[in-house]
Image 1 (cartoon, rainbow, N blue to C red):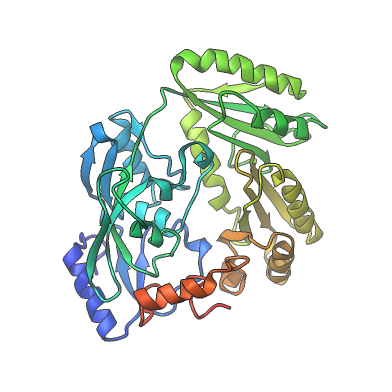
Image 2 (image 1 turned 60 degrees about the horizontal axis):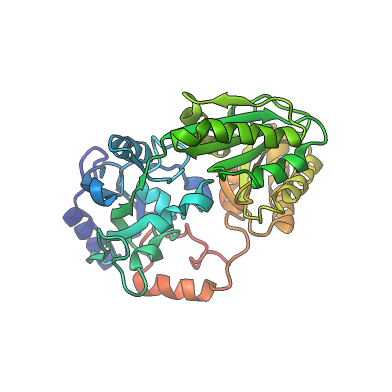
Length: 404
């Protein structure tokens, strides 16, 4: 199908029905932002969904919006901002990341502790099954579903259960103000800074500890790294909250805090983008879930593993949610020689770590998914039920028969 032509529901249904009848695999093509989180698709025909960028319904008074799967996060943000609303999808590379891709990848961002995950904001959908059947779930009303919401079954399925055509989403009122706090950490202040940040009031919308990523993320490196904290609030609270936050950081031994107002959203975008950016072809980025109280220890341990292989490392800890992002990079010869052993060592330490980006030619030989869930057999049964001939994105998911 033509990349530039809008692929309507009927055309997708017909293409899938034909592929199913002929047992011909189909690879779904989107923005490609989350391609590093999955295995490569086994030889298949391509179904390009990028031209599906229509806003189908927008009930601003009800805080609900329905979009086609190819609508990008940036496009959605612009549409909602005009009505002082937003959706905290928090996807990297928002100009390319599509709503369908964000949901299919099961992406969750650094503001989920406050606003929920993209999955939590999905209230309905339309989709095409592997045999071409068109179906719907949910609607345009919040809490419209009694029982299990089928729409959410497809979140995180990497496009292997159905083709998402439409997503109905619950929007939120846009905070009046956003301010980013940047601070370099003097030696010996890191643990105290973490404790103070987790107890800030009002609660930060997002907060990170950063080591490295000097070309991608704002702020000056400190002896103990640096922190970036996002405050979103009403204008009446902004200055008082700023005084309280600065005082709290001062108690942690941080002498100076830089504020970004006009540049807050751009700085936030750079923080989201950084883990997906690679300093060359010979790099690999992982993200491992953790508890907020244990994220720093895990980051130190992952840093030790990367150091052992004498690679360059960059680290990012989500202070509020606990996620640890670690990027390893090196020269061509050492990376090719060491990447498999590095992958094994990092997964021995952090079994649930997932690859976000990179790996080069070795990517499909690495452990993209980390520790497989205990419900794996049920997931494979669902795949068999929804796609008995295995035509949708074959080979990409951990519950595909290609993986053990």
